[in-house]
Length: 427
Image 1 (tube, rainbow, N blue to C red):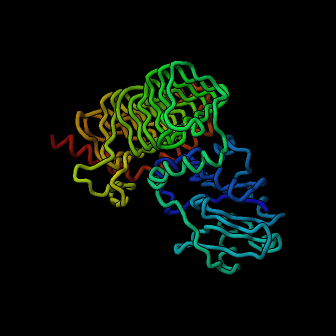
Image 2 (cartoon, helix red, strand yellow):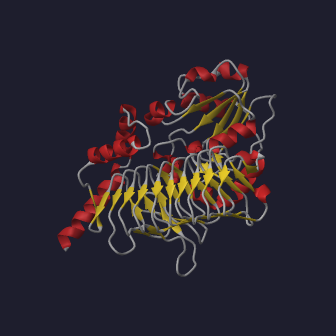
Image 3 (cartoon, helix red, strand yellow):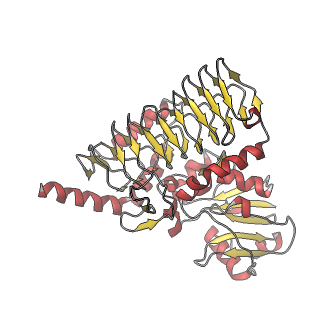
């Protein structure tokens, strides 16, 4: 049976912006692995293909071994179609059996089992036509399929997921180097240091509250305290950090200051002091010294997040920090509001007070207002430089994808720029 992961253009994709602007939803992290890795493990699939929004297809092909947007993968085998929003823990499908499907109330294909014979009969002129055939022709299964609905769901679930992923990995002990003097609190069975990882002297690994997984090539500098549950990704470096519980830090990050119950996708820098809490940070982000986000309101009420620049969404949680998109940069002393949305490719300058809760993609936030700054080409040049420092290439495909993101995010950005111009004129 072939697993087909789906992340088709839809109104619900905005629920995972700004992180999903440049990647499929299943590439988002929760715990030690991505949502996609969890779906593959849950289904036991060895044959995987996927469908993503067309504007990111070429870039994603360079990042995965799976066939991307290949209609030929809809033929020749039994298929299991799964939305990238589906929770792997709630997915249970028998390897053999008749066709069936589960769609959401608004028509999104969540899970569908399609036999080889049925697949051959369906319209495969496009993935949308194929899914439409599935919806029309297959019986609806009376199955409850739990889904991820917003990015902050991943952040809030992260501590528990870290514990489950550590158990599933089945590893413990030291296969790297832990230099002495050092301290491990709790059980050593709840600590794993992978080959090539280096833990300097004067580091505390506190596994009393949950397990700690330090992946290959990671390096933990002196005076760092790591509280479990926690995952430190490959070749990431912690520099005297207060790494509180519930963190998932992807590969090639540089982390200092205080970080709590946050997810950092990878290749990002929070090198200096400052607080990051209950946040999700994309790739190629640089948080300037003393950049800090609030994750708790003074009245302890539920935090709201604005995803479109207009409509606040009640998260139902008292603890939600910032959502920060890829390639965004903040200046020293930046103060991010509770439940802040900071788009991708944004350049943020501090004002000495809390910033607005919504900052659009490709915005230059200068002197307290959103401007167009010096345009996207300068942002692209900065992205090229940042990626080069990690031996990654800024390609023509990357630029073409970001050009489409620029168009996609233009309405809210243009509105914010006009508002900024009016504010400047009024002053």
